[in-house]
Length: 143
Image 1 (cartoon, helix red, strand yellow):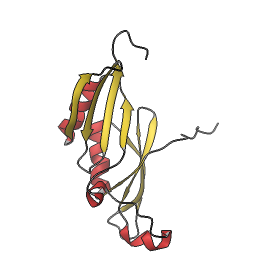
Image 2 (image 1 turned 30 degrees about the vertical axis):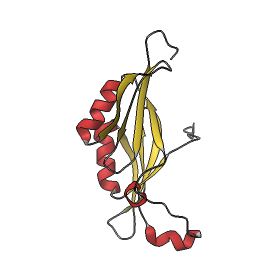
Image 3 (image 1 turned 45 degrees about the vertical axis):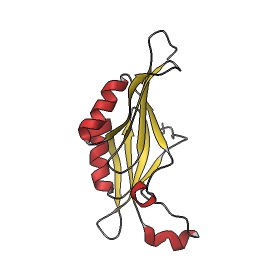
């Protein structure tokens, strides 16, 4: 029996993938699935993490490969001076998830609150500049 393939996978570019894997392990409870070092022995060209049954990819910035991809850049949020994407994770306890990320080194962007759409919702920014949101349904709301 083959393992089913996840059909939508976030791919995060960071400035220090090894440190990011450690942070995501502590902050999200993610487990490392695979790590593929680059030829320079310093950066990671690909890594996979798993959390709550879903995987996400992590890689270091490689500005030197842009010429091979028609100028397409995979840049870390620090290079971009921000991020345009928030990765959302549905969790059993939003407050606990946000606190765990803060304890690991994230900063709060939106303190957990009872949102008008029927969820407990909060958002953080990880030390690498990526935004993460967490929520769980409020009592009486559909899961």
